[in-house]
Image 1 (cartoon, one colour):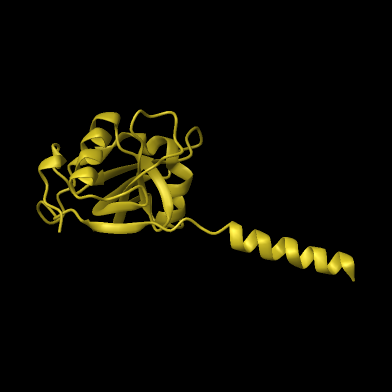
Image 2 (image 1 turned 60 degrees about the vertical axis):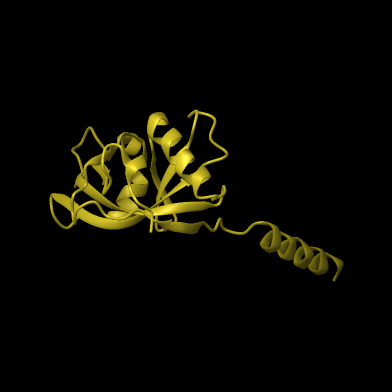
Length: 154
């Protein structure tokens, strides 16, 4: 009986303390031009498996899929000077470059947004499943101009 009670307490503690990360949207980048995805996310090569989870099973040789992404600060990352994650459906699929992340942090500061708040943007995931030597070859472009700090947030 004591062991069952201890197990119940441990489970309750686990579920109360370990909860999934929930991000909030602080607005959306206004689309430049419909379906103009000119801002490439270069770190996508490191996130091929999560991207495959988003694009789904291989039905054709290549994929082109428009999704809603969230740009949000990653306070746990030590690899990048300014770490801004690109998240789709709760799955991280890349990072902004340090240069872009610094500009994005200025936007967050100007809008008085905080660590758990991001900005939504349309993203294009495209590419193919690769070959025997490569897991996949997916890329991500955002519907933002190269100097996205000039973009409007709605």
